[in-house]
Image (cartoon, rainbow, N blue to C red; front, side, top):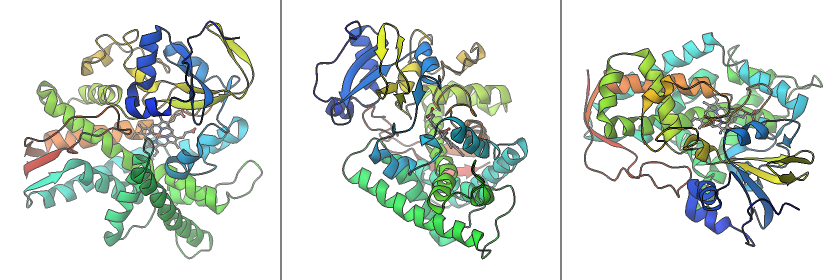
Length: 417
Ligand code: HEM
């Protein structure tokens, strides 16, 4: 069985995954000249890795794949939390996902953008009096304030640094072993307690949650059986809103790096062009590494590309590789925002935040938010700020997951225009 697909003869390739990072799947696809191969990961489990647009299409076929049992325990204990929307399938998933998508209305998006501008303005005024700032650290705090204001989560001024660090550490843990992973788990425990207490207070009428906010929605959402979510799950789901808004800080930092490395793009963004802003943000999401791959388990046996997928097998979809595939993107390793003028909008060839359908599948609930917050933030950087970029190590390691420029983008001599 399955003698037609390339196989790595290995007991476990976890060390190779740690040492090759984002390129683990692309390297093997290249070596085997194949968009599909079999390896062993997660303690010697058989794992099939797939790449390409057609691979994404089958990965998001709900008849073929399920998410239950797909997320490793260590990811649930840091990045995801337990029993959240990421782990659901079928009707239960759709019902919960609708709750997430109900928060993404044009009106709520408008409020988010307004908060984003206000927080950049407040922060920038402080920067004028300092010698230099680290953009990634500042953007995390800005986005933490924005996330909490938008979600209806109270946040005291003296809490901001700790909460921003914790929300960010959960994300920082996903590809880590050792101290960075343990920091992520501690951050998860502290954040669970913080958000859990808030939801408990809302439910017992000790705190008001503004209607339409994520806090209100998660506290009062009823599942398919008409029951409130248990406190642990409501907490995980509210953190599934607040945490990834802070994650946008990473893309903002990558955007600043692109403006620095490709100075011709800065002028175009400064021209206040909405259209170019969209192209630029899409290219940042395509070009820079964030999510490496996604995992799901085979729901029922099927055959694809001469490969027998047997029930329960773990399958990884190479999202970094798809965004950089020469079959899908011309000159993929060049930063060219204009390429998005010709993009046809396939839900399966550009998948930085997953692919397929928002409600029926697991595609990122916050993709529109991410795009709009990035546009707003990068417009602020280019139109409202003047700054120098001193010499520093801006290199991005493809082995560190999630990736970030080494120096986290230091800016000096900041002036608000
Ligand atoms: C799912 C990436 C921002 C909420 C996902 C997935 C990816 C992703 C790769 C998994 C897709 C799949 O499993 O098929 C990102 C990146 C972001 C970002 C790179 C930018 C920083 C956001 C924001 C929110 C959000 C701002 C909400 C405010 C979610 C939720 C899911 C999800 C709730 C789970 C969806 C489901 O399982 O149905 N994201 N995301 N994300 N994201 Fe995002």
